[in-house]
Image (cartoon, rainbow, N blue to C red; front, side, top):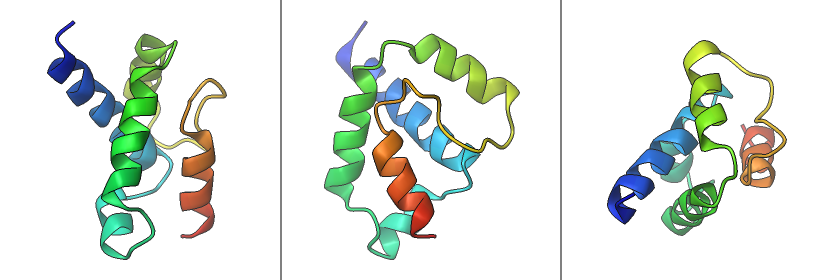
Length: 85
């Protein structure tokens, strides 16, 4: 898969996961709780996910989730952001 397509796909997955968990990444960045470098690193971690197809399917059927799936490589970051809300 083309690298730019992969990055766009995983950027969307990361943003959708955050949204599903009740977080707005743009708002978090504006208030200084999340740097643009952290977003970039999170997307890069997401590209190494072993289950992006399952993640995408989960995001399509679930409106609101309590937590990210255990295989999510961004669980620590998402927990930190959620705790800071």
